[in-house]
Image (cartoon, rainbow, N blue to C red):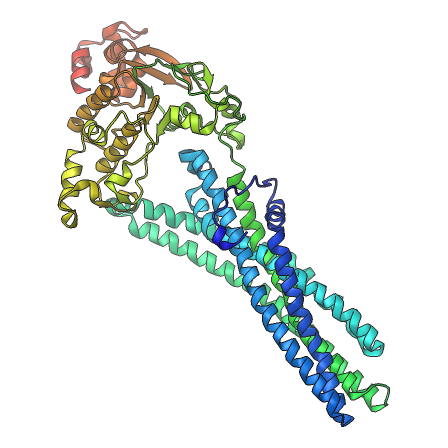
Length: 621
């Protein structure tokens, strides 16, 4: 794989059993690139290893006053210089290619998993951790893959040079050959502590990134409540913890580097002293001493790769573990088994008993907003799996559309059939036309969707901001996450995008929570009119939206407990009335007494001012 061939047509099926297994899988899938890098690395390292031999020949030729041998030694040095230059250039080229292609593979895997999970991803993994994995962790994983082949080349060169020196001059070569394993493995006792400190640093850095991401996402709200300084102080403390952890980690790596300098220095001093003694006694030639000393000196260069690979693995292992946590998440507990099926019909959840009849506008009321979000995800086929708290949800039967389990059909078909709009939908940067250019049935135009979502004021604001586009709001650029718009405007544009898609079943989680009551009433009517004959489910507690629905379902503690229309449930179901009207306990008791619900006694005369009639409740609703 070359850089020009990116992206991968298929990044593969990763081994997500553990971080080390994932790293091994990456290296195995880039075997060709690793072998090329290893070959060029060997050429480079062995070219460097050959220099001491030629230098020794040149020195001995000068001592023996042999011009022919000196010329030969000079020619060999030039040839080795060319080989070293070519090997170093191609090694760098292939190593960087391995780095970039490995990082690109991981990014494609993460992008594919993000597309598969959708909004459920950030419910299972913190947004800051996802950002950390897709940025800094990807680079560290690529670094280890890139360093692996260079380390293999360096280790091979050390073995070849050590054996060569032992054969060339046993009296000194054996000293070097015996010392090299000690020098290479001397840092092993220090690596566990260095790894723990590196893990601590990465953990704190991930938390700081998560805090920064959450702060930026909620900056407008923080400004509104005056909480900027509070969160700024938290981030300062978190960043200082990261700095202290980084210093502690750097101290260990500095100690490892010092050991890598000290021990080879002792070896060279010992080698010079012993070799000079042998040369003085006439047991070896001066040229042989120069050859062995030069070889030992140059062996320090490949020896450095042992420190680098240890550092690369220490930093990439926790990064790979974080990537595995994301990549091991699944859309559902089952595999897609039904091919070529585009289901239609009623949307039914066996776990809760929730039924959304085909072609009707169904509103769902949940007292717990978190429960509503989880149920909305289930209706879209995003059953939560993996965590201990979610085992019950994981074991629950799949949602059915027209009697077909969403978990058993391909992801593309499930997404085309059921679309879930999250409570906090995200607007990507781009023009309004690009925002609404999404896969759709083609039956709903952008103008119709914008009208149903009551986006007239949004279009006017965009037209005023599009001086360079002849006042065309569709060509106006929307900033990332729609930060230039208000919360209500962002929510309505996201709703228009969902309406344009025109899926078989549309699930909306609090689609009007950020708009005023007058706009909310018009939006509810617009949804009901545009989606007439199509299955629509809206999770809400607003009376205006509930009154526009064909049927209303009350879900309490994970089970459907009442079904009807808004006005009937308001009169007959106290739990429904408590959620929708947000009434107090006294008001609930009074309303129950009026309607004959429960065993609540009739109020006394002095309690009458606290009592509300049904008409008053509906008027307030």
